[in-house]
Image (cartoon, rainbow, N blue to C red; front, side):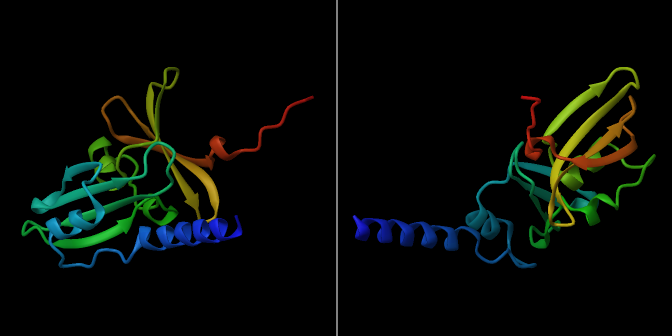
Length: 163
């Protein structure tokens, strides 16, 4: 029984070690990156003929990686985009749904605030790399970013009851 536990632990650790691996390097072809990472969860057309491949972790994930390729199909950048620093680059009154989707990928949640007539896209992320947070990006009816608000992610908040 002890031998089985040791073998199982070893296999789990070996699997975890091989899961990540080094990130793709600038200059790699799209085919080489996709052979290693798999098919992206979405593709977006970027400025100047760029192609942006989204590798999202889904509705409960706090990380989305974007691989940006030039018109030649070679990787220009590969970055984790759900971060305080990247959210700080959003320009209120200028960015729109298309630019937000191209920058951050698909949101974890969407909602509509009828009293304020705003659509809200919410992204889970680690604030300062530590705190489980959500960034809420508010769009007016014309699709322009009007507000942003960060707060704790309710998914990770401790549930307390009176009893």
